[in-house]
Figure 1 (cartoon, rainbow, N blue to C red):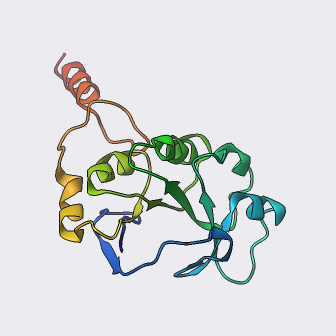
Figure 2 (cartoon, rainbow, N blue to C red):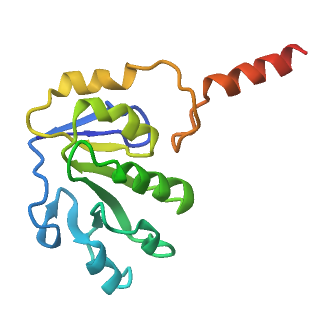
Length: 171
């Protein structure tokens, strides 16, 4: 499995090969610290140890439970249980737009190249690709659509808003 990390700039900027996804989130080592389940994080009441801590959100978890408890979280891993399960997109959008989370949001699980552009639009900036996915093709996935047609958590200008701005400027 390969990890593509967006960080603050280009989604394609950092690739870490062979990053293992957690088998059991409660004991999962992540490259900078430990990943906890949502329940474990809430039981700790947001207190982090001397190393960075992350949380794994499963599709059934309510991200709003993290409201007011995001301090100390270095990463939130959003589990995509299967390709057809879209709850992770909603979770990421809520984390960015409603809760204002500024840290890393990582897609884990059944993460395919076809999903990357939409995931990035929802605020996900790190992607642990499924093992059979090609990293070079994944990098190109972010160039698939040069224009977007609706607002999203990535706050890119969308076509109709840009057109309206141009028309107002010309008037």
